[in-house]
Length: 396
Ligand SMILES: *Cc1c(COP(=O)(O)O)cnc(C)c1O
Image (cartoon, rainbow, N blue to C red; front, side, top):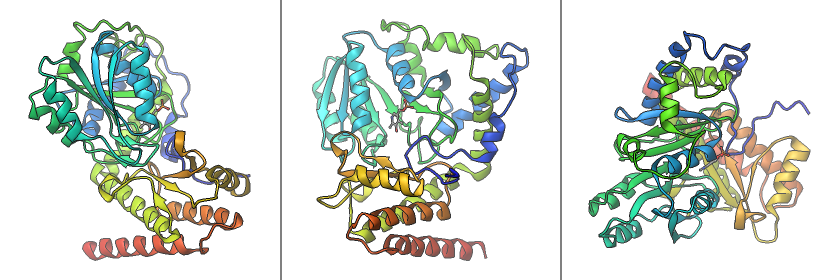
């Protein structure tokens, strides 16, 4: 096995050579006086990725999960009420974390395949006249189900009753791949990690923090040490961390931001939208159903797809891996065995996406799935060709 194949799991994503080379560096002195020249411009540039001018960017050596913990422990106190909807494995795990931190979690159970229910949020917030709810938590892109939620609508629901709660958004599998507007959507903390849209190895949590969230630290009683925002900001001002930073990963992140700006964020988003639609055309050509309930909920970074009745999606993903050396995401939680996920985010081209579609088709055919070999590939090819024709015409 040469392991040259791209991965089609929704994170960690393929690491472009440019970023692998950027991270291939000897040990650097993290207390060197010129470190601030690396860190400060990078943190500033990251603001453009979050689309914030008024917020700050804070990084930790962690994964996205650590970012969740940083968000809640810096701003909330045990017993504080938070409002959150559960509609997939990631929203579920953030809820679990809030409960372990002894927050009072008001959960809106929502069918998997749906997104954040802004209308129900509006009702709960309007009924909360005494402002018991301190924060609303939303998973922007539910990676388990391939559903994107409308964050502007959630902000609208909060504004409708002038509710002062903070808005925390998990954008782990959407930032730097799909449009995200921290300031315009009034997001108080946005949480992501290094291994999805940023195309790096796992190991960093990256957060956008609004002034209001920053101010909440004054009274927040949750215990925090490693994830203290103020400790991190004070150390960053001198080019360091309050502990040893992952210097190679920071070099990678700096290069990644340059890479995103070279392509142009809007072009990055358009590429993801294009790749995703091709994958969805393939799914539809197979006659399979997406978990996402409606078109406006379709994620441009991951598609979760039910397999036909009587087939086990784990057998399929295992076979694709064993026979062809290609990884796809398994179904999570109640979807395990019933669905698989095609990650289409990060460093990916049309041709790479076609290789994934072609390979899973071979695996399906091997297992006697009722599909026609090449049907999905052809549907995606037609779409990608048509898109390219439009692009070439525009350029002419
Ligand atoms: C991947 C992911 C996470 C968590 O990530 P880790 O980096 O594994 O801690 C959280 N939320 C969403 C939506 C994700 O896709």
